[in-house]
Image 1 (cartoon, rainbow, N blue to C red):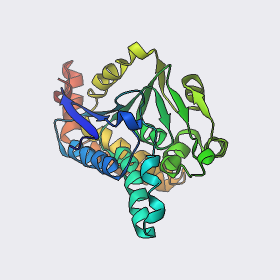
Image 2 (image 1 turned 45 degrees about the vertical axis):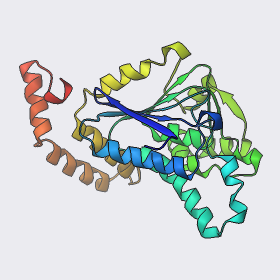
Image 3 (image 1 turned 135 degrees about the horizontal axis):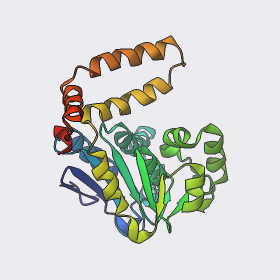
Length: 259
């Protein structure tokens, strides 16, 4: 992988660390593409069960790299679109990752950094972390974060955060529903505990849940969603993992994927 990120896999847990600490782990095109490539590699690796996304140095991620974006006025519109799509693509790649994912957040998570955090299934953050959707105060649009922000807090709160542009602490982030757990900085290893717990779930069910939840959320709560879910229940119940899981329960043992 590129020098802007570092990847490692240990005991089924993949760790993707942003390594642009001098740039507060902000995203430029190369870093965004490196994230996408790493996510694709982890997705296709059967040895990977869980993804942990982290940042090196004083921040989780400060979002888009201003030094890079300040070069955009000299680019053609099509080239600017390519840059914007690269950043959006990194967040989407994390969101679409078919296995459980956890954001391990310390320091600052700003703009697109919040997008990366919310694209993960879980966010465990240090009590000293700071957050902000500050783009409005810089004359910019925090578009990278908007889809996952709306999913996390709803359209009204998302709109308030985006137009206000201020920063806030971990306690407020938890109150708003942006993060799942706030721990003392030295207790961020709680991420590892959660990752090990997530490995107990059947991989096929976890992948199906990640695919189905947004699909069902987009449907009315009527016969259409019931029909989709009924079909998937009927199909999942006869899979090898379902049969193994039920038999393991009856045998009072762990299923093969959890050993």
